[in-house]
Structure formats: C-alpha cells, structure tokens
Image 1 (cartoon, rainbow, N blue to C red):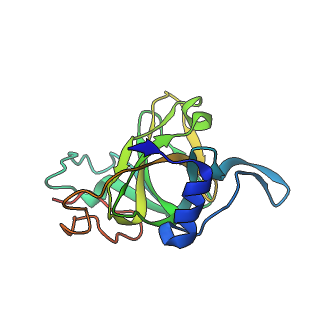
Image 2 (cartoon, rainbow, N blue to C red):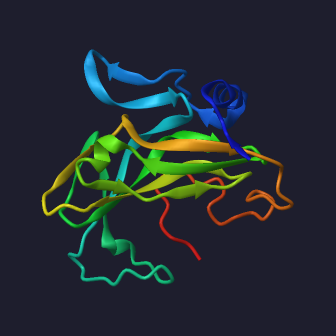
Length: 186
C-alpha cells in the first residue's frame, strides 16, 4: 500500500471520488487570503461547509456515545464560528466523497489551525465509504478560537492497495451515505 501523489488523486477525483473537486491548492479566493484547500502534492485539503454543531454544557448533559444527547450541541449555520475555550465543534466537509474499494484515506489536521490550538481528530475513511465527512475540532486553548467555512480544515492522505475482502460499503456501515453533520451512532 502506498501514498497517492497529486496526479493519481486527480484521476480518482475526476472519476467521482471528490465532488466538488479543486484541481490545485487555492490560497486566495475573491481577492482574499484563505486557509488553503484543494489538491496538494500528496493529499487533498478539504473545506468545511457552513454547518456546525458547537458543544455546550448549558443543559449539563453527560457525553455518552451509547446514549448521545443532542442537547449537548448548538446548531449554527455561518461562514465563521467561535469554539469556546476547552470545547469542541463538529462540522462537515463541503466535499462529498466516494472512496474506491481499494483506497484508504486518513484525515489529518492542518498546521494553520494546529498552531492556534485547534486540533482535528484523526479520522479514517474506509474503502467503499461515501458521504460528507463529519469533522471534529477541539479548542485546546483557554481562549475562544475562530474557524472558517468554505476554507481548508483538514488534509486527506490517500493510500491505494488491494481490495479488502469486505469494504465499508459491503457491510453497509452505519455512517454510509451520510449527509450533513452526523452525530455518533451505535
């Protein structure tokens, strides 16, 4: 299994793996600097959509992945959000992905946000999975932190190998085809 370069990611994206697909690394949009997104040498920088779920303790709910209380989040639709100190937010990718049956993807945080204390959870995207990527961002600082929609938020690394016996799509995984920000499921 080897990491895929830009030309191979482009081939797969144009065959339907990433939609919409940006064929180059974008650093300015509408004459303004943005946190980069699009195709890079050995990856693809995803953008956040403008749908966010910000963690709140206003209802004093317990965070339990088996019995998740949706009241733990405030839903926000905005081009910018503030993540409270020592808190986190969920977002979704602007791009919809269809991972080929012989490709494994790992989402990593971008250094621009990491240098501000915003950490993206490392997330695998399994062979055969498709959907909007639900992204998790932790504000590790004692200060409020800002994030931007429609700009880069995580980098995807693609690894191509032999097709596994059973893909995520074959087993009809619980997050298959997700749209929007998706909360934990059992």
